Amino acid sequence: MGSHGLWFDAIILAGYTVAYSYGWTGVVIHEWLGIGLGIALLLHLTLHWDWAVRTTRRLLRPRGHDKLIWLVNLALLFAMTLCVASGIAISRVALPELGIYTMQSPFWFRLHALTAEVTVGLVPIHVALRWRWIAAVSRRLLSRRPGRQPR
Image 1 (cartoon, helix red, strand yellow):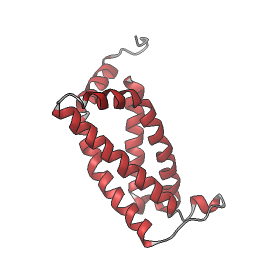
Image 2 (cartoon, one colour):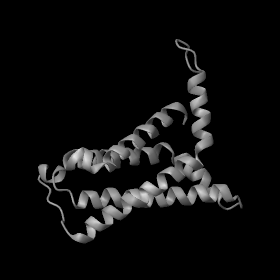
Image 3 (cartoon, helix red, strand yellow):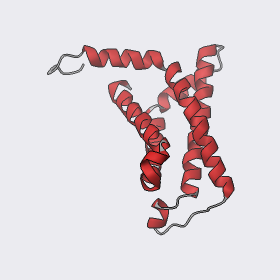
Image 4 (cartoon, rainbow, N blue to C red):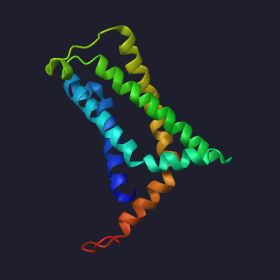
């Protein structure tokens, strides 16, 4: 995966942080950014698919750390998918601009708020559990000399 994956993941984290700051962004930016994050999360899952498959296979062998990472990632995938889906379901600006009218029921608003809160709790755990990979890729990035081609 390497440095490109780290940068992409950092952009997703920054985008989610901005989107979560609903009071600062307003509804229009929040919705469009949320739709963009949904697409980015699909790409993220695609980029890390080989890791997901390897880790799932390893679950057959008892190793607590791998199981924990896998469970946190599965919970995060589930929460973020529901957050994006419920956000699309309650869109007041982005989708209506495209001529798609959405549901405005309290259930979807509550689901969106709940899954956003769960995601906020799981993202730091996800980062902490992958910290060794983040640190290793960051060290490689910082140790490169300007003008030198990466191997």
